[in-house]
Image (cartoon, rainbow, N blue to C red; front, side, top):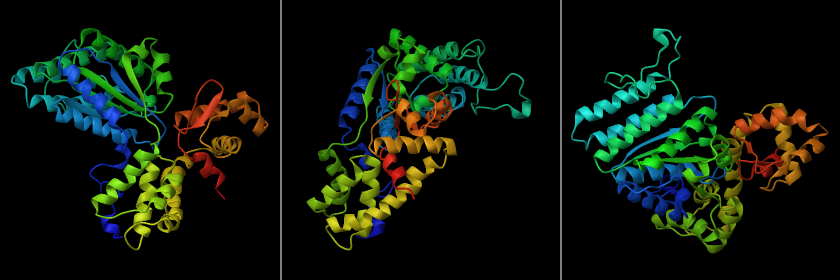
Amino acid sequence: MDPIRNPFAPGAGQRPPELAGRERELKAFEVVLERVARGRPERSLVLTGLRGVGKTVLLGELRAMAVRHKWGAGKIEARPDAELRRPLSAALHRAIRDLAVRHRAPDRVEEVLGVLKAFALRANKADAKLRDRWQPGIDVPAAQGRADSGDIEIDLVELFTDVAELAADVGTGVALLIDEMQDLQPDDVSALCAACHELSQSGAPLVVVGAGLPHLPAVLSASKSYSERLFRYSRIDRLDREDADYAVMAPIEREDAGIEPEALDALFDASGGYPYFIQAYGKAAWDAAPSDPITVKDVQVAAPEAESELAVGFFGSRYDRATPAEREYLQAMAELTQGRDEPAGTADVAVFLGRKPSSLSPARDSLMKKGLVYSAERGQIAFTVPHFGHYLLGRD
């Protein structure tokens, strides 16, 4: 097959494989947009799942949906050890610009931008030298006495309220999308929950859509006990067989090509139904196929190429971030689970390594901060990356 036409190459398809089987989430968000725009209360949304299931792609599609409904929309990616104030300011600046083109009162828009600038400038440390102070690029004077107290919880409530009121002026809403939400700092998580709670009480048209690893609900619950009532949780998992087949066939059929049923069987077995893997194996199978349709032999020939690419870009890039002590811990998890995608007991890891559980806590905690493992439940630890145990057992 012509590699230039490869429908599995990043950005090649009209609808990426990661969005196959996500109609339920897309329809649910459509309802949220309609309800909030009509002034009816609605909870914010949290998407959780392992890496490789397409959360980031889905988050991008939800943002596009909000924009199509003429909402203001901004998206950020949380990072460990980075405060929320600066990236949030940039995201809401984008959302306000979306709203400004429809607002008939420029003074009102500038007023809210002034509040946003006041909020943003609080990202600078009080003792920072002038040359080191960050400027948010908002071309209006900073407001005084609004969202500038320095207390992130107070400031975020005031900022969200003002931005939501601006959206209400034009009959729409604001969507703030946060990827890797589990990486927010504790104070920022607490402030975000408090702001969402305040907005839900008032029915203001602003929703937060977060995406993160499976333990994100526990992170939110530990911050505010009422967080369970604030968010609608949606678990994003691997695709079932029907949706996985569609994710393969739809891009191929757009190129007026075909694939044999046995080849679909082989692709599903290799990918496990995980969208990222479907794309990787599908791309390699297309390149390996000398003619139409793609056969099971083409998939078998392509598998080593796909696995090699995943080993470097998907698994290896994460493994390389681990220290020797952390790699020892990861290897023990892989041995205990025999490479299966299931949790291992933390006590079992300690026994396997012949160590005291307390001595392994630093390695485990560091792996959790790096997003390589998560605590499935008390006393259990699991990989955040599907097939990671299998990858580790296959290393030389």
